[in-house]
Length: 159
Figure 1 (tube, rainbow, N blue to C red):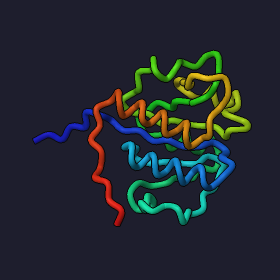
Figure 2: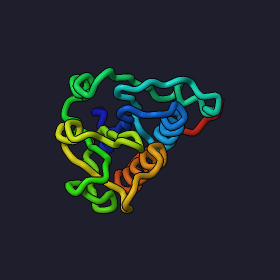
Figure 3: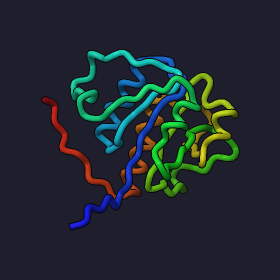
Protein backbone atom coordinates (compact mmCIF):
# COMPACT_ATOMS: atom_id res chain seq x y z
CA UNK A 1 0.00 0.00 0.00
CA UNK A 2 1.35 3.41 -1.00
CA UNK A 3 1.52 6.24 1.53
CA UNK A 4 0.17 9.51 0.15
CA UNK A 5 0.31 12.92 1.81
CA UNK A 6 -2.43 14.82 -0.01
CA UNK A 7 -2.28 17.94 2.08
CA UNK A 8 1.45 18.68 1.90
CA UNK A 9 2.96 20.52 4.81
CA UNK A 10 3.77 23.98 6.06
CA UNK A 11 6.02 25.76 8.49
CA UNK A 12 6.05 29.29 9.82
CA UNK A 13 8.75 31.51 11.22
CA UNK A 14 9.84 34.98 12.21
CA UNK A 15 12.68 37.05 10.76
CA UNK A 16 14.44 39.13 13.43
CA UNK A 17 11.65 38.70 15.95
CA UNK A 18 11.72 41.04 18.92
CA UNK A 19 10.17 39.05 21.77
CA UNK A 20 10.32 35.48 23.00
CA UNK A 21 6.63 35.70 23.89
CA UNK A 22 5.60 36.21 20.24
CA UNK A 23 7.58 33.16 19.13
CA UNK A 24 6.08 31.11 21.96
CA UNK A 25 2.54 32.14 21.06
CA UNK A 26 3.17 31.47 17.38
CA UNK A 27 4.60 28.05 18.26
CA UNK A 28 1.42 27.11 20.10
CA UNK A 29 -0.79 28.33 17.23
CA UNK A 30 1.40 26.48 14.71
CA UNK A 31 0.99 23.24 16.61
CA UNK A 32 -2.77 23.63 17.01
CA UNK A 33 -3.31 24.67 13.37
CA UNK A 34 -1.27 21.83 11.85
CA UNK A 35 2.17 23.28 10.99
CA UNK A 36 5.04 20.81 10.75
CA UNK A 37 7.56 23.09 12.46
CA UNK A 38 8.42 26.69 13.27
CA UNK A 39 11.65 28.64 12.98
CA UNK A 40 13.45 31.89 13.66
CA UNK A 41 15.88 33.72 11.40
CA UNK A 42 18.41 35.99 13.12
CA UNK A 43 16.49 35.61 16.35
CA UNK A 44 16.43 33.59 19.53
CA UNK A 45 13.85 31.82 21.60
CA UNK A 46 13.68 31.21 25.33
CA UNK A 47 11.25 28.63 26.74
CA UNK A 48 8.03 30.19 28.01
CA UNK A 49 6.36 29.21 31.27
CA UNK A 50 3.01 29.92 29.60
CA UNK A 51 3.53 26.97 27.22
CA UNK A 52 1.00 24.66 28.87
CA UNK A 53 0.68 22.49 25.75
CA UNK A 54 4.45 21.77 25.75
CA UNK A 55 4.67 22.60 22.06
CA UNK A 56 8.44 22.10 22.16
CA UNK A 57 7.70 18.36 22.53
CA UNK A 58 5.18 18.29 19.66
CA UNK A 59 6.70 20.20 16.72
CA UNK A 60 10.30 21.36 16.34
CA UNK A 61 11.75 24.86 16.38
CA UNK A 62 14.69 25.52 14.05
CA UNK A 63 16.91 28.57 14.48
CA UNK A 64 18.65 29.90 11.37
CA UNK A 65 21.49 32.42 11.65
CA UNK A 66 20.71 34.21 8.37
CA UNK A 67 18.14 34.25 5.58
CA UNK A 68 20.67 32.42 3.39
CA UNK A 69 20.95 29.75 6.10
CA UNK A 70 17.15 29.30 5.94
CA UNK A 71 17.19 29.15 2.15
CA UNK A 72 19.98 26.58 2.06
CA UNK A 73 17.86 24.36 4.33
CA UNK A 74 14.46 24.86 2.73
CA UNK A 75 12.85 21.52 1.85
CA UNK A 76 12.77 20.36 -1.76
CA UNK A 77 10.03 21.94 -3.90
CA UNK A 78 8.83 24.12 -1.03
CA UNK A 79 7.74 27.73 -1.54
CA UNK A 80 8.87 30.59 0.67
CA UNK A 81 5.88 32.88 1.24
CA UNK A 82 6.62 36.30 2.72
CA UNK A 83 3.91 37.93 4.81
CA UNK A 84 4.22 41.69 4.45
CA UNK A 85 2.23 44.85 3.77
CA UNK A 86 3.57 45.48 0.28
CA UNK A 87 2.02 46.61 -3.01
CA UNK A 88 3.20 43.37 -4.68
CA UNK A 89 1.46 41.21 -2.06
CA UNK A 90 -1.69 39.21 -2.75
CA UNK A 91 -4.50 39.53 -0.22
CA UNK A 92 -4.69 36.48 2.02
CA UNK A 93 -8.38 35.78 1.37
CA UNK A 94 -7.63 35.51 -2.40
CA UNK A 95 -4.45 33.45 -1.97
CA UNK A 96 -4.17 29.80 -2.98
CA UNK A 97 -1.73 28.19 -0.56
CA UNK A 98 1.02 26.05 -2.09
CA UNK A 99 0.96 22.39 -1.13
CA UNK A 100 4.39 22.80 0.51
CA UNK A 101 4.91 26.25 2.03
CA UNK A 102 7.11 28.06 4.49
CA UNK A 103 5.59 31.33 5.72
CA UNK A 104 8.00 34.05 6.80
CA UNK A 105 6.90 36.93 9.02
CA UNK A 106 8.90 40.02 9.89
CA UNK A 107 9.12 41.84 13.20
CA UNK A 108 6.26 44.30 13.81
CA UNK A 109 8.48 47.38 13.74
CA UNK A 110 10.64 46.57 10.71
CA UNK A 111 8.81 43.89 8.71
CA UNK A 112 10.66 41.99 6.01
CA UNK A 113 13.38 44.03 4.31
CA UNK A 114 13.47 44.28 0.51
CA UNK A 115 16.44 41.92 0.19
CA UNK A 116 14.39 39.22 1.98
CA UNK A 117 11.19 39.92 0.00
CA UNK A 118 13.16 39.45 -3.23
CA UNK A 119 14.02 35.91 -2.12
CA UNK A 120 10.38 34.95 -1.49
CA UNK A 121 8.48 32.99 -4.13
CA UNK A 122 5.25 34.77 -3.17
CA UNK A 123 4.17 37.62 -0.92
CA UNK A 124 0.84 37.80 0.88
CA UNK A 125 -0.79 40.38 3.12
CA UNK A 126 -3.70 40.69 5.45
CA UNK A 127 -6.27 43.44 4.95
CA UNK A 128 -5.57 46.66 6.84
CA UNK A 129 -3.15 49.53 6.72
CA UNK A 130 -0.79 48.67 9.57
CA UNK A 131 0.76 45.54 10.98
CA UNK A 132 -0.71 43.28 13.61
CA UNK A 133 1.24 41.49 16.31
CA UNK A 134 3.47 38.90 14.62
CA UNK A 135 1.95 35.93 16.46
CA UNK A 136 -1.58 37.13 15.62
CA UNK A 137 -0.65 37.53 11.95
CA UNK A 138 0.93 34.08 11.85
CA UNK A 139 -2.12 32.54 13.49
CA UNK A 140 -4.43 34.16 10.92
CA UNK A 141 -2.28 32.89 8.03
CA UNK A 142 -2.27 29.35 9.44
CA UNK A 143 -6.01 29.46 10.07
CA UNK A 144 -6.58 30.56 6.48
CA UNK A 145 -4.46 27.65 5.26
CA UNK A 146 -6.33 25.20 7.51
CA UNK A 147 -9.68 26.34 6.09
CA UNK A 148 -8.51 26.14 2.45
CA UNK A 149 -6.26 23.06 2.50
CA UNK A 150 -7.75 19.80 3.83
CA UNK A 151 -5.86 19.10 7.03
CA UNK A 152 -5.83 16.28 9.53
CA UNK A 153 -4.96 17.84 12.84
CA UNK A 154 -2.94 15.97 15.41
CA UNK A 155 -4.86 15.11 18.58
CA UNK A 156 -4.72 17.89 21.16
CA UNK A 157 -3.08 16.78 24.39
CA UNK A 158 -2.02 18.76 27.43
CA UNK A 159 0.10 16.07 29.06
